[in-house]
Image 1: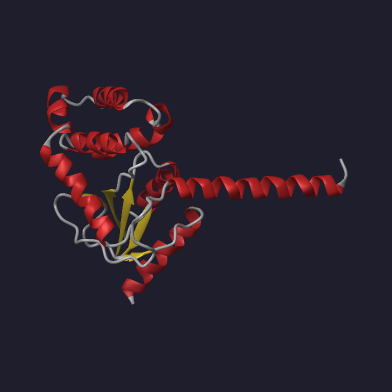
Image 2: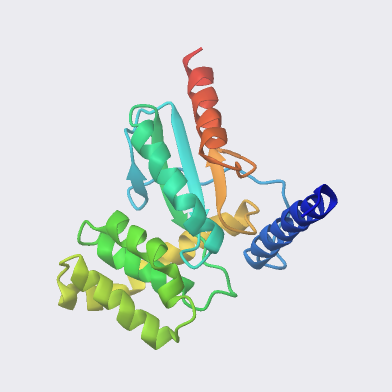
Length: 220
């Protein structure tokens, strides 16, 4: 194979990769919502799911959709950030299920129901790790699979069944999404560092640099 042919295939693969990334981004945008000038998320409350110390110099808020492929891709990065910045980072996740993802709301309900039994983050991890197993199921099939995840986490299934369809959990998800819409969130994941939206980093190191810079700025 000559040099020209090698260069051709390298360029072809690079262009194909850019096209695929563009498709993923487009699929995880919600038409008709506000543009890129984002406001400030609502204050953190007892209803939020929080990891990290309350006095951490950096607060990272994510508006996410469990059926969003990009959110699943970012989840290991966020988990690594939380693990490696335990004293400087407070992480908060909020729901922003996109209309085109038919099982996104049910997944959020399952996470919230697990949270009622102290297993929110465990369920979140299962949902992301197994996204391809449930994303194309019917809503009934997906709900049954989520119940299986609850059983795997040793949750009380009777309580899970009540909580997963409760008005309280529905209101929590709706409130998160409404706040996202109010401040201009239009796709997932959308991240805010200390109340300011950021462009999604391309990898862990770039994300860690943002967190470290914000922590350093707070200490000065």
